[in-house]
Structure formats: structure tokens, C-alpha cells
Image 1 (tube, rainbow, N blue to C red):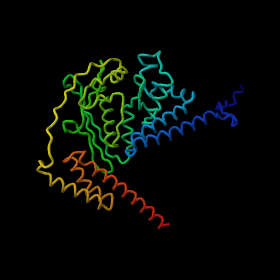
Image 2: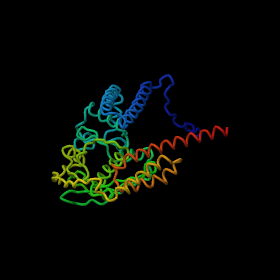
Image 3: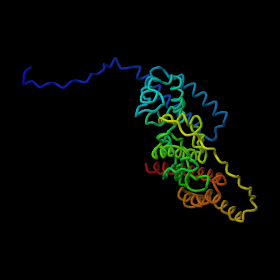
Image 4: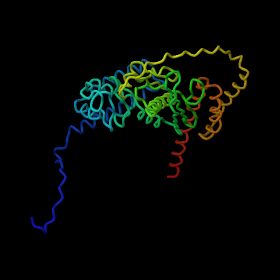
Length: 356
């Protein structure tokens, strides 16, 4: 080689225009359609106005359609995400206690479909496959909470694990606002926050227990804020209930390398004596407060009027009367808030049109 000749940089390999991978384009179109379809089904299923029978039929139809869309190419990409830091975790396959075992295509496909329909991403470790079943985990529930329409000021604060009656419990406080209305998690004892009893593994550390409790806390926030109920692997581990997690909870604990201890029997709290409304000395004052909030909601002419007036009083009323008694007022408030938002957006559009 002539020493005066400069070496040329290596050229990147380019694919000729007539050899564009048609398969990739087809797969991309399929994935986009599946994504859009799953989001639409998720919204319809979670809509309180959708009846139970319709929910079941819509879900069954969606599962069948998404199964048909799963081809070998998509399954191959999905398998590359198993037990990957960028994908999702499972209790079988590489990096687990069962490295020579893999889930069959139908199990993997159905868990991935369930994740889609429940709004969990296949990346970012938002769900796990445990004992052949889908389980949403902390990253997924946290993102879903952050994306709730109208939610602001979400703060979730865990306490330190404590042992009571041979069970490890973690109280987690959570506060947030929905369209300006304050809300929070409240325990069975009436104190702020809820106590969660995560399944115990042989070597569970405080950090492990706090992480498991945070997952359940974000799930509780999502369900309370949206009015939905989402079943999961360890739904038998409720605040104040057994910490063992049943057979499904024990299977989930195996991912950490050990079986949990047997659950302690739960103590049933004594039912309080029934109380008649006429026995309440504050009945008239409560009725007057409800009337003021109801009239204030209807009279509000702007979002600020709604939040500063009946909104602030409704927050106090919910603490005084409890959530069930204030549910109709809260629904009326949120409906009025959305109506005022639409009016404000319409006024802005008219103002812009007049300026043109």
C-alpha cells in the first residue's frame, strides 16, 4: 500500500431498496394493530358502565382474536424477552432454578395477551410469569398509577417491616388527588395507610418485604382511584389477612429461591353493633353539609370555583362520613368537573377563532 494513501473507512452494509424486509413491515403492522386493539378492549372492560356479561364476552372475543394474531415470528421475539433485564421475568428458563425448562408457546402467549389486556408492557419488568400464570409487578402498577387521568400529587411512602402474630407486615401510606379531590389509603383500623402482609421466603430481607408491599400498595391505589378490581396471583393476601398467600402465593415466593412459612390463622374481627341513623346526634348537621356540597357542585361556574368551594368541603365530608356515604357526591363532582373542563376548552377554541 502506498504510504501516502489514506485508508478509507469501512462502509456500512446497506440493504438494496428492492430487498426491504417485507416480513418486518408485516410484523410491525400486526403489532401496532394488536396494541391498539388491546388498549380499546382494556378501556371497555374497565368502564363501570359495561355490564358483567358484556365484559366476559368482550374479553373472550379479544383473547381469541389476539391468539390468532400470534405467529411464529412474534413468538420468537417474545421468547427473547423472557428473564431479560429489558423484558419480563419468569420462574423457568435461563437464570432461574429451572434453567432447562421453558414454558410452552400457549402458556407464554396467553400470559402475554393477559398483560396486553390489563395494560402491562412486555418490557421494563412490568409483569412476571409465576406457576404458568400472569402477575403484574411493581413497575407495571406504578406506571399505571402515574397514567390515571386526572391524578396528581401521588405520594407512596412505606414504613419499616414489623412482626405481629408471627406475620411480617408493612404499612404503606399513600395520598393523591383526582381532579383536585384528595384521597388516600386507609387501613382497617382507620389509621392512614394500609398494612400489607407479603409472602415470606426463607431469606426475605427488609428490602424484599418493602418491595412486595409497595407493589400491593400501588395496586390498591389504582383500584381505589379508578373504581376497578384486578385479580392477581396473590389476591388472597389482603391487608389484615394471612401472609402466606395460599398455593399461588407460595408459587410466587419460589422465584426468590425458597418456600414461605405456613400462614397463621386469621382472626375474624368482631362485627360492630348496628347503629340506626336516628341515633346519630350529628344527623341534621351531616344532612345540611351534604346539601351544601350538592348545591355547590351544581352552582360552580369554573373549575377553580368547584375545587375551592364544594371540593374542599367534600374532602372534609369524606373524612367525616366515610367513602361509601360520599360516593354519589364524588361521582357528581367528577362529572361536573369534566363538564366544566369541556366548557373551558370550547371557550378557548372560540376565542382563538375570533382572534383569527
